[in-house]
Length: 161
Image (cartoon, rainbow, N blue to C red; front, side, top):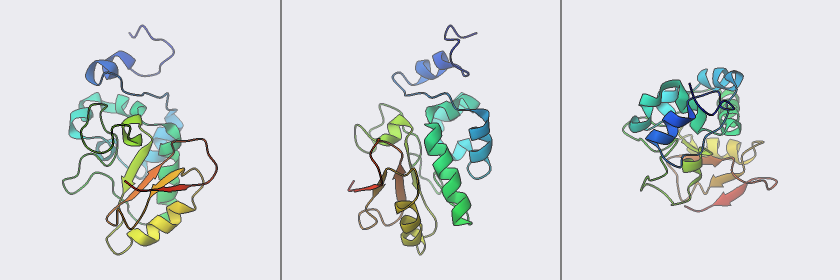
């Protein structure tokens, strides 16, 4: 039993595996919602998969809800980690991929992929989507759409990687 009773997951296990990792209390209703469209295996790199269901708590619930809602609005399959990619979802704090203060390391960003021909259309949907706070320029990242819920500003900022 955890000595951190305020957590509904094994906080110690996560911190032991990934020291300094951000964690969140994610309601089961949010997990049920996102699970309709994305598996935890798809959102985590291989080294985090042994956490099992505790891995959901590496993600900000706002990100999980926005991703689920975007997928529902899109009406077609979307992918995160597929085809040999591993860090388009959550990234460990010591991960060398991406920026040192990447929102992926905070569990607040995903790189989602439709198909090559549809990424620009998906980007446009995400740009105007409620809850998306940052999106990478489609010209800089044409093969994926980076969405982030980081920040408390209004609207969506277009960022360059």
